[in-house]
Image (cartoon, rainbow, N blue to C red; front, side):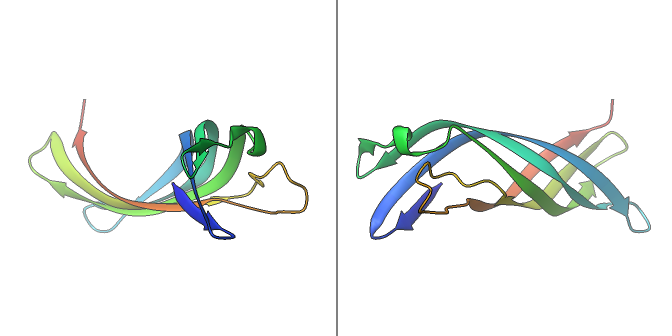
Length: 115
């Protein structure tokens, strides 16, 4: 995730684990809304090619939410198209004078298999 703060291009990379609840709706239940909490662990932080991880918190917590649609290919498989958004609730800067929170969004394509 790249962000520009005070003219600096910072790239913060995280491994994030969402814990979401899904609500399926529509006549065929092909639509879904999801929401929940996401925890993240910083894997790298760079600005201008320099390591800045000492200035960035190692973890973050945020809200995740999204909407998706499943296209049924047959009784057991489907194609899922969804949009996921993330809004950070914790400050990622270790500097108490600067409040920085991450936001992100992604458009996803996946396969759903009924076991």
